[in-house]
View 1 (cartoon, one colour):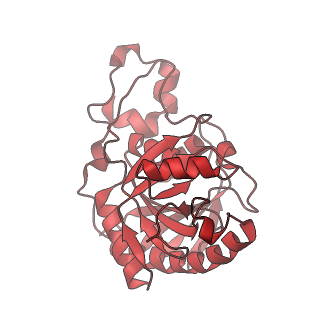
View 2: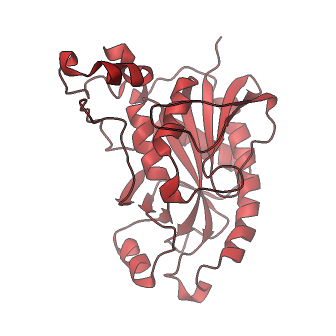
Amino acid sequence: MRHPTIGVIGGSGLYQMAGLKTVREVAVSTPFGQPSDKLIRGKLGHSEVVFLPRHGKGHRWLPTEVNFRANIFAMKKLGVERIISISAVGSLREEIAPGHLVVPDQFIDRTTQRPSTFFGKGLVAHVSMADPFCNDLSRVLQDSALQSGATVHRGGTYLCMEGPQFSTRAESRLYRSWGAHVIGMTNLQEAKLAREAEICFATLALATDYDCWNEQAGDVEIEQVLAVLQNNVNLARRTIGAAVALLNEPRSCSCASSLKDAIITDRRAIPRKLRHDLNPIIGKYL
């Protein structure tokens, strides 16, 4: 039986993937430029895993500077079918304490400066984002986090802000009033692009602080965030290992066909170069 290829995008604190065997670095070219770094391929158990540090080795890229399109396109070129995205977040809810993990199921977009689609320039497609995370993959992440000894919250809204500054107190209170549960700076573009690329996507959010709405907990201080983050990263590594061991069956969700009826442009009107460049994503529909 062929085991699926699983992608892991590491966020703040998770810059390498422990436990990989037969490791090799792969430089992948894309129509959208270079990914954040070389991708790391290896075996984890029976599964092929592709790891990418979102901010590059040494944490070089701001959230706004991350080349999300190149990152997801590179994963697609390497045959990735599922992506587990690790993200450090602030908590907007009392019950989500620093050190807890969250597997969100919704997004609010507060970014303003980032490309969020592979399409345009002669090709129009509209994918559904009503449920932006793969339910099947999210369930496996939740089960794996519990198995790893984490306190994990299933469901909730991830508010994605532009950054790199943290929220003002007024913003933090506003986002709470909207019903958001956690706040971060990276995952929304990844989810949208993964949906367009027909890749299952789920987030393991690592709560590091209470943002600044909770004045009793103090304002966000990067030193405290990093200390909590280190403990969370160890939990995340165990969770990823447990999840990869469970992801050995073919996909049965709708993520694999999300582009089926989404391409609106007349096939004859799609520019030849665009057909070539986006072939890994759209080829099966042309």
